[in-house]
Amino acid sequence: MESYLNFNVGILGHVDSGKTSLAKALSTTASTAAFDKNPQSQMRGITIDLGFSSFSVDSPDHISKEGYKKLQFTLVDCPGHASLIRTVIGGAQIIDAMILVIDIVKGIQTQTAECLIIGEILCKDMIVVLNKIDLVPKDKQKQTIDKVSKKILNTLKNTKFSSTKVVPVSANPSGVDSDGVPIGIEDLINTMQDLAAENSEFVFSVDHCFGIKGQGTVITGTILQGSVAVNDNIEIPTLKITKKVKSIQMFRQPVEKAIQGDRIGLCVTQFDPKLLERIIYRISYYKQSVNSKAKFHISLGHDTVMSTVTFFGTNENTSLENGFNFETEYPFQAELLDVKKLESSEAYKPHQQFALIEFERVVPVRQNSSFIASKLDMDIHSNMCRLAFWGTVLYPLLDNYKKETLSKT
Image (cartoon, rainbow, N blue to C red; front, side, top):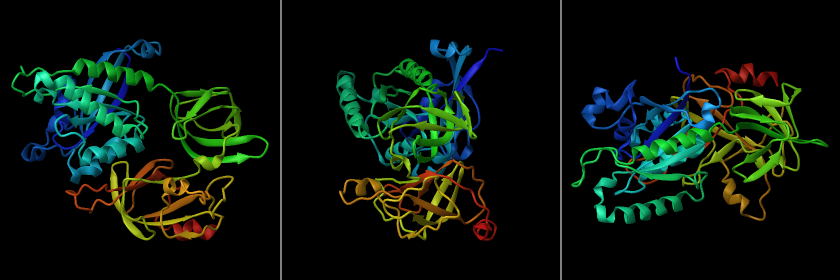
């Protein structure tokens, strides 16, 4: 049997943008709930489950050098309807990259924007597919594609997807001049291959960052992808900073190199740990207040549970040398700070902020996993963002945590 490298790609976008048609045009093998097999999907005319399908290509040179003969793409077709955002969040947590499908006629819509926010939180890379180009008259196609692509890239310029590629396609042509054969699929597959090759790069999920006097700054976390060695240059994309790795430790033992799955500490020099100390991040498009003791829908993996949130943290201009500590007393904070807005003020003094999340039922939680907090009871027909904030789980607690954990501190 030939050796395969699997690459999971989520297909996200607004309802009726053509996501399922695109998955069908790309795929050679259908699996669980693919192409709206669910009877309810067929009855309602929309995707309601995660649909799985796949196709394979010969490995690009970069991947074949690693010993893989075939590159397999597993496609995760996510629902586009506003009421099914829980399923979309779950799907986004199991993918390596995403395809954001946009109807060229309708442009960016409400769920397109929500999918983009989810992608920024949970995905490293994205391709924008401009679908249904057959609905544009042929004499105006190039002009329309250029115009819409420019508008989309302008929207993305302040996101981590600023250099994303836009691929025009028609997954299921039905226009007057159409012969029913999908358009642009080969170009899309080539772009996906390039993306898969790029994803062998080093990706590191950071959970703590602190300074050690005379040594530098230690960044701890887990390698999600690729490898790192002493003297490598690593990029912190959110800060647009590149630093050289001075040393690496794995469970307090020095090592020269670490690979995917390893939990390590990286030591770099001349880097302010305060720049990476936030554990929770407010989503700027959410315009409501985010207050302590308020209830939010918290999505972790495929679970979405109503929860009560309480914010707390350090005093202004205070940094924790070794991260969060149960033995430290923290002041209560009435709301989640809008750090981006505060950072623009000359009077801003940095400090750390954490959240206690109390679920209404027991939920399996993995340390260092990502979560998204939403207000899913908002009107789905409004054009307001329902995604409020996101963060990283530092410590999962038992339901009797006050007795079992807090009583020991």
